[in-house]
Image 1: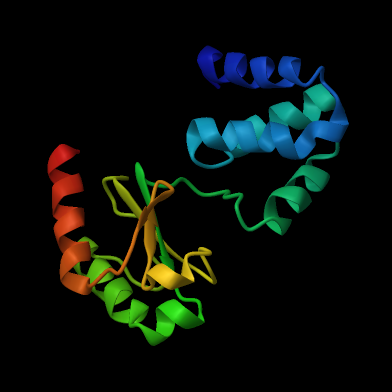
Image 2: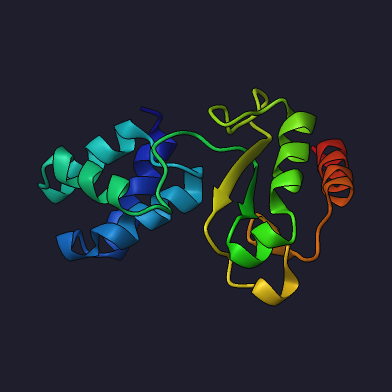
Length: 157
C-alpha cells in the first residue's frame, strides 16, 4: 500500500479520534477520496479501529451508497423511479450504455472515465426524466441530450 493512501486513512481516523462509533463517516470519507472502498484500506481501518473486517464489509455492503469496486471519474445515476420511468428514462439509459459500450453487467468504462448506475429515485420527480453526473442534476433529459453531454465530458477527459 502506498504511503499516501496510508496517510489518507490515518488522517480520516484521526479526525474521528479512532472512535469505532464513526465507522460509517470514516467509510464515507474514504469513498469520497477514492470513489470506492479499496479492500486494503478497509483492512487498515479494521486493524486501526480493532474491528473485525467482516463487520466493516457488512456495513459497506448494507448501505447502497458504498461501493467495493472502482468507479469512473464521472458517476452517472439514471433515475428509474415512477415519474422518470413513465417519462422514458430507460431509452436514456440504453443510449448511454450504447455510447459508452456498457451493459447490465458492465457499469464502468475501461478507461475509468464513466460509471453508469440506475437508482430508484433521485427526488426530482417534477423534473423527470432526471440523471445526475457527480451529483449535478440534469433535468428533462432525452437520449440525444445525454449522448451530447457524454461526448462533451469525454472531450474534457
